Image (cartoon, rainbow, N blue to C red; front, side):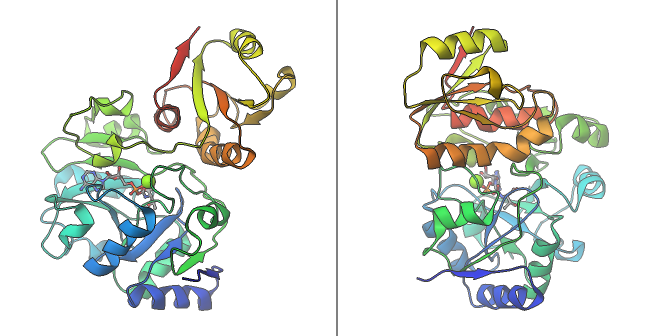
Length: 339
Ligand code: TXA
Ligand code: MG
């Protein structure tokens, strides 16, 4: 199929809404990453998302709303903790998993009794949902397993010819996918870290459990709370190896372990000290939000340049850094060298 390229003008948003109303697929900007949207209430449209992405059939989707009045018909109940989280962080980069109502087709949640809901802050995302008149199911708009898209160009690289349209809304501000919490089983549990940090959640709900899969590799046969966590993720074509050390030791290691296909993923300001191999920067060492914003672009750049091995500086795991670390360690297939 031919993919239409749309802007964020009023007319183009109407065109996108028409495509979605007819059961089509449209990539849309959000403040986190670009999403691949379809009518969340149309099970046939939802199935198309899975085939366009090559997404495993047991990895559920997030339902996006643009008005709190849409929520009641999507969930069975709204626990008090969820209510507090919505008041504090919606619209914004937080996804909340609650009990699914029968109005949501089982295909959205891959048959689970729960559903993930997000109210994005991006004005274009909000306008498209409003123009459609229904909520949108939207995973990140990348081929399954590849780094998530933070620009329309990233989406084109992955999905051109496989979806009906792409709306270009510029660069995504947050750069990593939303924080995912579940409140479906009585406690508040963090399943995927993002811009909204565990500390911020705890300040609102009083407590938050951190799922152990966030920092650790899953056992082969483990039952997971969030199916998305068991798949290979965010991986560029290169082998990425995280080096946990100070900068001096990092440099020493790179010098003795490089050839012409090697590059390094470094913090801003470090590039002048690296002379032997190409250097891609992903933000200042002490600025986790900047690293979050730039990490996926850096991974896309690694793909574009075709490096075979990339040694990466290790980000902080504090605050938003936990989300950066979570994505990078998956991109690296959990390969970490401590010096
Ligand atoms: O920022 C975001 O959340 C972006 C933008 C487009 O909104 N979307 C996104 O979707 O990241 P996706 O499909 O790439 O990630 C959704 C994650 C997956 O890890 C999935 O397993 C989990 O949320 N998830 C969705 N519904 C779930 C459910 N009912 N129970 C447990 N995990 C769920
Ligand atoms: Mg994704």
